[in-house]
Image 1 (spheres, rainbow, N blue to C red):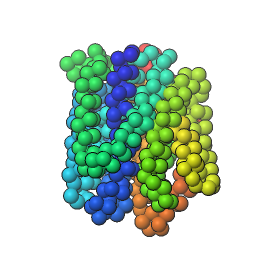
Image 2: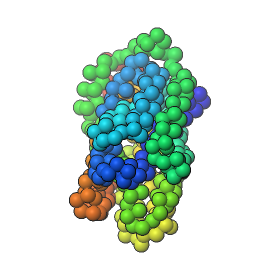
Image 3: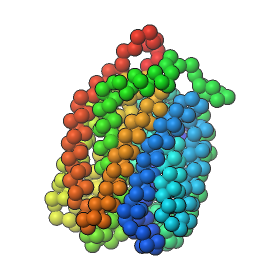
Image 4: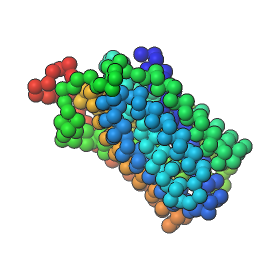
Length: 398
């Protein structure tokens, strides 16, 4: 168990830690290349959409062939995407590298794939806790990597910083050896009671799966809008870039605690209530942030609070999917839920850039984030967490 958690946590630390700092590149790149904020935001929006789309197939591949092969390919794509992002000379190439390539890379190196291994290798009594540990590692990656990325940009320039990160992310490849699963020897998956088609038909016909997807859409909209656009929002308000770097680092630091607590509580409390509380609390936090006088202190307080709620949706959502449907197709089903998250991410980051360019303000998107949080809280209360009843399938399957 320790090897699975340690290697999985370190891979998530690298993968999600690097991507959480992409907002720091918005102004350096757009100013150097003469691009609009909407252009940069659209490329990152495509990245989030590609992450979700390719996550479905990365999940299928991980369920079929094991996570090891998927993680190796994901690490190589990540390095290529970061290097391509640095060398792009026009917005089309930038969108392909920063958008499509990096999206596919994140699909193969983050939660859907890692959680599939955890679901198969960790005892169900500790599954939600273990997922919380992995999510907390990703949060620590944000706390660790965002200041590092800010330092690299300031000291080396944005291009050299991206090239340095492209080398660093290759460390995920040797770590993948710690996630090789004995049941996938010579590329053969363990026997299953359900085909992929049957598993998908069952999940998409189940109301609770639909509600989890709706809630996760909101999660993506909120966190990616804040993560990408808050640095520019703060700079527009007259704050130094260091304030934005510290703010994102605080989000990452407090997210370590938030995700771990959510994963631990998911073993004892109704996960639907945990999720509803998280989404509603986000709306309250955003409303208070907009209402209060803006100062470095208010920024840091908001970052700490939103950090506690940042990825804390991940462990209870994925543990609920595993609880309802079992673990045989967990990476694939988690990939579909996450695709909904990434559609929300696309909308949050793209609308942030689009509406800023049209109105000169982020206010409309902030208000949308508040309303959607209330909606997500309501829909998650309707989730039924008990294992689904299957006819003719052995109880051991789940």
